[in-house]
Image (cartoon, rainbow, N blue to C red; front, side, top):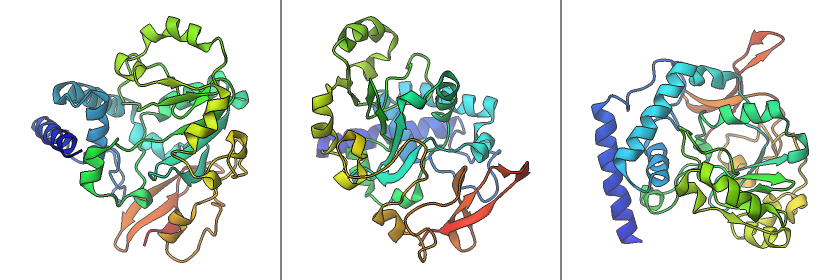
Length: 291
C-alpha cells in the first residue's frame, strides 16, 4: 500500500505541475460567484484521470485537456444549473460513494442521450468528503456506482468508451444473460482497453453476494436483494450519515425538493440550493446547510 501511495502521489504532483503550466488549475470563468469548484480541477478529480490512464501523467493530461475543452465549448458548468442527477437514491456505498438506481425498462433513447451528457458534469459532494488524502491516493478516486434493474445492469455501466473525455471507473456488470459473454467478445474492441480489462460480468445469482461487499443491505434496493424500498425516479431518501452533516433536520429523511440541486458557498459556509427553473422562472432556493 505504501508503494502504491508513493506512486500515486508522485504521478499526481507531476500532473498538477503539467496542468499549472497550461493554466488548467484556474477557477473557470463561467462559474457563478458562489459556486464551489468541486470535481473540476481539484486533486480528487485529477486522480480519477490518473487512475483511468494507469497513473500516466501525460496521458491523463491529454484526457483532462479534452474534458476541459468540452466543458468550455458546451458550457456544461452553466448547464449544470438545469440538470438533475439521474435517480440518486440518497444512499451511499460503504466507501461513501453515492448510489444511483434505474429500471432499464424506463430507459429510452432520449434518456440515454441525456445520461451521456451528464458524465461531463460535476460530481463532487462535500457531504461525502472527509477521507484522508493518503487514503484517497492509495485507493480508487471518487466515482458513483449505478445500480440498474434489468438485463444487463451493473455497478457502473458499459457505456461507449471510445472517445470519452471523462474517465469512467467501471467494475461489475450485473444480471448478465447467458448469451452476453458472446456479445461482449464482439463489442469489446470498441471499449477502452483499460476499462475492458477491469469489467467483471455477473450472473443473476452472483449479483447480491458481490453488491453486499460494498453496499449495506439497508442501502441496497430490494430488487437487488437489499432492504431499501426504492422505485425508479423516486425522490432521494437520505442516509443517516448525510443527515448528520446537515444543520438541524431540515430534510428529515427524504428530500422534498424536485429538480436539480447543487452546493454553493456564502459567508456562513457551504449550503445546498435548488436551481433550475419553476414555471419558466429561474430559482435559487435554500434547501439545507452543511455543518
